Structure formats: C-alpha cells, structure tokens
Image (cartoon, rainbow, N blue to C red; front, side, top):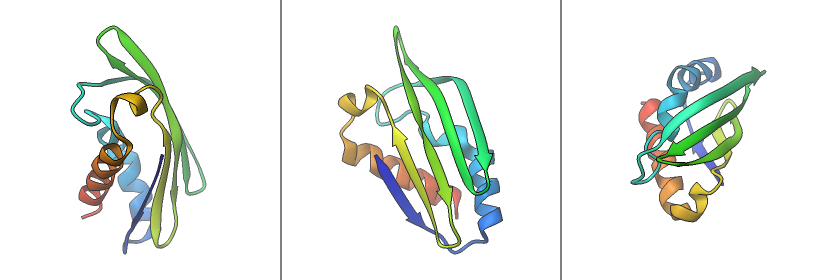
Length: 105
C-alpha cells in the first residue's frame, strides 16, 4: 500500500516528527486491537526503513516498509501482511493519511 501526503514544513522538521511519532502511525490499524513488537527502524538520508510485528491475540504478522520525506511530501510504502486481508485497503489508507496529517499540523 502506498500513501502520499503533501506538506509545507521544512523537510528536517517532518523527519523529526516521523521519528518521534512513528509508533502512533500503525497502532490500532482499522478497528483491530494491534500490539506492535520487535520494531526495527533506520534512517538513510530522508528515507526511513522499518520492520515490526503486529500482534493480535494469538496471531502475528510482519509489517515492513519505508517512509520517504521530500521537500513537498511524505510517501509511506507499507506491506501490512495479513492485516491487508482483514482491513479494506481504502480504510487503512484513510486511517494512515489522517494520522500523518494530524502529526503534521
């Protein structure tokens, strides 16, 4: 899934906001109670590469992707694993978009 959000803030400020608030982006994806564990993330320039595990009761699924910050927008490419089968893609995109816009206010 890919989500692109425009911004009008300095690139460095957006990078700091993403770093500080990353965990909030995927918590409670859709209506499912999701716990995020085994998080790994690293920045290379203005691109964040991440991998984590989402646990829902006895099930778990890997989530991995990138966040690319440019001077004008922020693009999230994410593979939600089996969550993509449980949550409509449009709903997940809307939720992530709303959260990112809220962080960038």
